[in-house]
Length: 285
Image 1 (cartoon, rainbow, N blue to C red):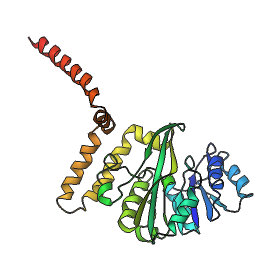
Image 2 (tube, rainbow, N blue to C red):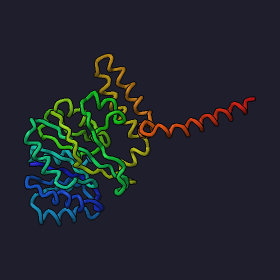
Image 3 (cartoon, rainbow, N blue to C red):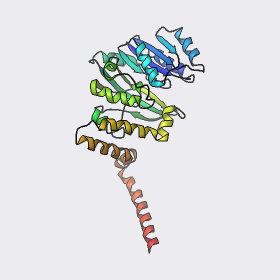
């Protein structure tokens, strides 16, 4: 069975569509655990309405210490051997859960199964598809600019027993808990990547994740977390990996790829640079 865990607080805008997404998967071996943090809007009323109709929905509503605490409560409630985290504003591709369930029958325990994820800006603009193909610890420690991380849990699934090895989510961490989980998980689990799109992550203006990324604090927190792992690496990796991390982070890879694919477009750039240089030299004469 797959236990889909949804933490939510004042999520009336998305909770109904989130519930329907799991229902529409038509997966016979699924339970949907919704952990509400004591919402003051219409969230709880909507959950109750669907829970009365669908027996696979289990829920609780009480004050918590944030998203990590809510996920831990969901894990404690879960009956399935496979866990999935589905944030209230994200969603699955059709038939994703049935496909995932079939693949897990072939995997040893504990395993982490990772697919692709559509990244949507403000809900309706497909920015890119997250394809995290390199998932060894040393690959991830080079940072997401070098090797994309799994950006959203709607596209990865894992054995519940994995938490027995790496512990639960840190209730004091409200931003990097997903990254920390992945860095720990890839060290002890069998990791399998499948080049299929299973999840959808909506980066919506005003949400916690969007605000954190735009403020630049996300990058700062990520590097601080990475440092705790770099310090444990053997020499010379302890020095080389941070250098590689900062190198990849500071290169405009989309722009570089654009010029590699279309080298003739470099000519206008060089012409413009030459004009600026000539103008600068003239001003010095």
